[in-house]
Length: 140
Image (cartoon, rainbow, N blue to C red; front, side):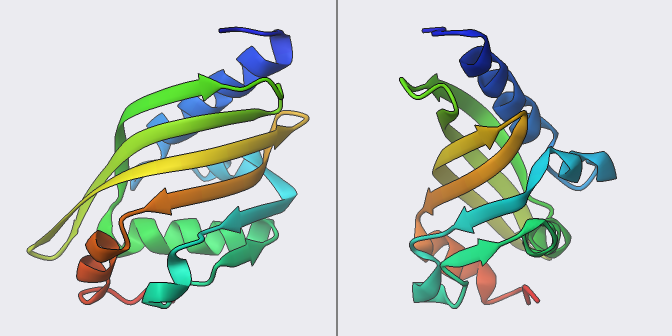
């Protein structure tokens, strides 16, 4: 359901960001992040990942580390617009590998945009799947 131009634009931006995330993405991908972006990973602490990451530089480092560590790519992307036109919910699959160890994950993510840039990113994932791959990588 398209509620207004802002909501539709944010849904398009969310799709583009998810579809282009991965090892071959352009450095300009990070231009989509607001300087004050916040990443929340509520299940992260159970496997040694920070629950909250603040600021564009820190978010860039985290995203790049994930790509460098296991070449994460997203598929099966579904975007759900919300009553708040600045927010969308995204479901997707992530895949990659660390050497001979495959990684396949399902995600649910809440995204909030401000003036055409990602301001807030809260991601839910199966921490057992992530813990299994983390045994073979170093996210630093």
